[in-house]
Amino acid sequence: MIFHFIKYIKPIWYFNLKPETDYAYFPTIDLLNKDNVSLSVDSNFISHEGKKRELAWRAFQMGYIKTSGEKGVDIWHKADIPIEDEYCFLRKYYHKAWVFYVLFVRVLLINNPFKELMAFIKTKHVRRLDIYKEHIRHDTYNSFSSDLIIKKPLVSIVIPTLNRYEYLKDVFADLEAQTYKHFEVIVVDQTDDFKEAFYSGWGFDLKYWFQEEKALWRARNEAIASAKGEYILLYDDDSRVEFDWIEAHLKTLDFFKADLSSGVSLSVVGAEIPKHYKYFRWSDQLDTGNVMLKKSIFKKVGLFDRQFEGQRMGDGEFGLRCYLSGFKNISNPRAKRLHLKASQGGLRQMGSWDGWRPKKLFGPRPVPSVLYFSRKYFGKTNTLYYIYQSVMPSLVSYRFKKSRVLKLISFCLIPLFLPFVLVQILISWRLSTHKINNGIWW
Image (cartoon, rainbow, N blue to C red):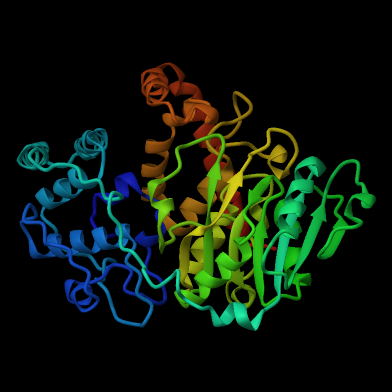
């Protein structure tokens, strides 16, 4: 981990784990100087290791991307970082509520309260940095002529759908308007009242079939297996995109010599749109509603794990496998989609809007696949940190995630609901154990 205290805030972050290949994700100061990226060392940090890692973190967050093979800071080896630097890091990059949260957790875990408080107090002068105010600009991107686009590789667009013909009509209209024409569309339709006539008359190469089982990951896996394209573009049935969407994915893959282009998703409901969606950076997530990747990736990492059927984080788990296997994933602001998150239809109707909100009083919290993912890759301790920080906000409805007031109310309500919540977590833990024992299957 780049700083040890990051585990309390981002316990299941991709970059907490070491990949097969380090593409200077967290650059050294020498590498930044070589690329004429001017970032000053922060004198608030008292150790050389703390200064080096803070600079690397800042460059990562600002969108530094290097793909030519140099080594960056090895954040995955155990480093001796003073506790003052740990709190300094938190104060510089996180809201003060998170700093208090970490202090509380550290004391709760029987760390020396005197040392914790002293480090907490000594760093009070550190001001939070708006890391997203400035970012590294890839100025040659706009003028870049993509040989990949000129070669016109076949792109296979994969769309599972369920009870959303009204939305799918707009999806198809957006695809007809694409400037890049060398693509096929593969639709796996699980609609209750399947309408074959809907698929007639569209102006692109269209394949479709009816799948009786309501299963998202089965649909995607079988569509990928049947795809003829060199590139797979995973898409949702309730989204809208601009006319150059496919080109934007291909151009980004070519420009950064990347393996995956993770387009950004602008949701009409739910959490706030992250500020880093405005610029290119290394991606620390994968959204199967808007991502283009080389089909050859599936040969190395496998298909989607069907243990996530009807649940959550199947795309995140696949993205982590790609990252660990050494594939380069770029967060692409040029390939954006508007995610309508339709309240009716879609494969979500077999699951939920949010993995932490059970539909029944004694349903699992979170859905078992969330703990399956966390326990499998990040271990029991980080999973407990993840549960502790996530369970309280889950008392607020997904549609009100933007409200800080409601989040505060949820913290006040936790003592009232604690007995029920503990039972829900134990149920989820038991069910996730079964998944771990079963292993990946597709």
